[in-house]
Image (cartoon, rainbow, N blue to C red; front, side, top):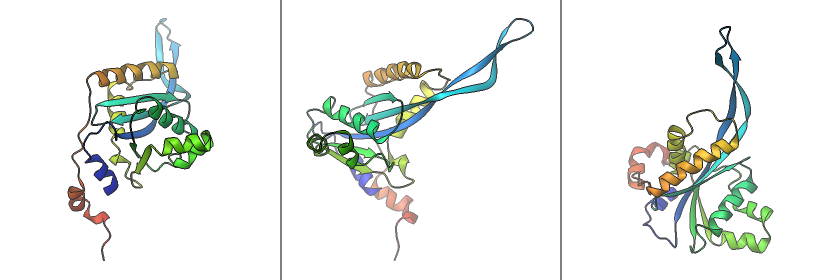
Length: 203
């Protein structure tokens, strides 16, 4: 926890950006319809599951920027390619990118070697630092705030296919980035040692 909070206290530096990364599922569903005796079309309360769209987000709170990708799964290889895409594009000129992540098993640096050659995998990892939230402490990842806002503002309705989700997500991301909606984290280690004192070991 303290490593994450120390990371959030770092000043903005384009050469050493801090990026919060996470993923979240969005269920794809369709509602059955039926026609009443009067000929009116009704939507049944019963729905049909059509799969899941996996949403990946990278959120740079001090820059007010985020990127989202809608994928078919949240496997390690998908996560690796998402991180690699950030390093190849948005952060191609950055010296080192610090990624705040939860403890999901797919979020491990050795997975880069399963996707890329050893030389290329190491070149990515040399430019990346991973800082993990503690077990049961994923609320410390500011990326979760992005999913919460997105769910309330754009994904609070059913979607019949992944492309529809992707379109809505892209529009939302564009609006947020144009307005440079960032986040300023207020919870510090000093406060944590008081408010969460029961979590610290005692002699």
